[in-house]
Length: 619
Ligand code: M6R
Image (cartoon, rainbow, N blue to C red; front, side, top):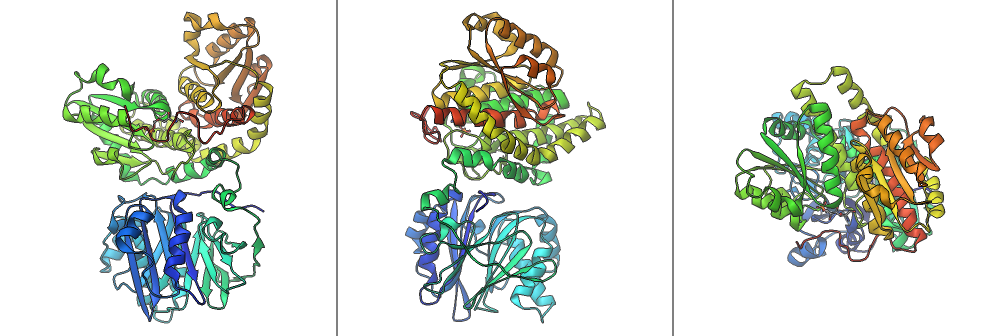
């Protein structure tokens, strides 16, 4: 039985209970969804013909402590635990979101791409918005349909409203106009129903974890479907043509732990599999964020790309992207070295682009604070909106990857690369130094990356597992790449080292003959990241250098690369014709899989590598 992963951030839950108060059940179900997001939470219930609502900033326990989330009347309700994408994690941006009258409440997981246009349209019709979220347009849109089409039922109004939405959504909505139902709808973001035959209760949720302790009878909702939950059970129809769909519940034999990991044995592999969807989300970034940040970068006198660990590798890759297509020089710097290296020279003319998954890494915050005190402009990319980094940045962009639980950064790295590539493309357009043809091709390929990454995960996972088994006894690995693939090689090495504990070295391939090559002896595996760009011919010479000294060549190549296939002992492939500046995205995937399966070969828990923390808040 197939169920989808964490399509993006946030968890939604709704329930129609026969004999119980809804709020405590919603509260405990949201707790089980907290791994999907935890920066704010809210619940709305229906009772006596009215909507009751509580919401606040903070994780569920914090908000419950101050608001008592269980203390809401009624046996029908919806709830939400949030990971911010639009609008900081503040009380006002928390879900559920209401319309102007307070008679409608909506929770949403996903990203509404056209929310700015819809908001403007609704504001012109007199609607007042209180939040900065994309979700709030949904409740006002439903309100507007109900106002303009009085014959419409609540379900009709939700259906009509969803037809106007572009992007991804799983929503649950209630209204005091019809206080005996919950309406849900789905496009791309996951939505499932739980049917409790013992009690007659029905649930809707982002995933089955939310209600698994109550029932394992599950109905999966597909894209373009709308659901009406009532005392009688559930009714599913197609949003497009109103046709009814009959679907009986399936039985899920998952444990609660399996459910949180969507059936995967570890978060890391689950998060690797989520990468196509994460890329789709990053491609939905609002244009004005990218425009604003690229304008700052375009005007900057000197630009430092500052980060630690994997985020530093994203910066390193970005320095090639910015240079190659935008002709913009930038300086990637380890955050832990920034103050010593540039602390005295950074000034009002300097611009810092800090990259951090957590937005809390002590070294990154220290570097940024130092630069800020010297009047530099601070820009940032982070996966945690509301984090310290966002608070000290002039402009920030959320990388849209959703919470990452595995300590090893995987999907957040891919999302950083995607946002940085989009910024490079904006800059390329602004600066007009490369041909429109090159920009068009790169943009076309960027749009295809979710599918490309999906195919890599599907086709290379078994091969990566076999290669990990074959090389499991090797006690040292080399990782080499030229040009932008240096960053990919560095990332592949970090992944292998941090989760499989195998000492590994990574160098730009050209550097290896200036020292590291003396370590090469018969049988040492050398992982070559070999994209077909301007560096290709020299990379082949480097492969031959290693091979003639007895190294085992493990190449990451494009699928039509017969030349390297003939030289390599083993290879993992990615689709062909990927522009060099985008290559770190697909080429990193086989390296993540290799590291993951190598960790399993060594009986290491890839989710919790020793001595490491997800967020390093000490210097
Ligand atoms: O949250 P940040 O992106 O600032 O974290 C930086 C590093 O600590 C992080 O990337 C670390 O290297 C990961 N364990 C890599 O998998």
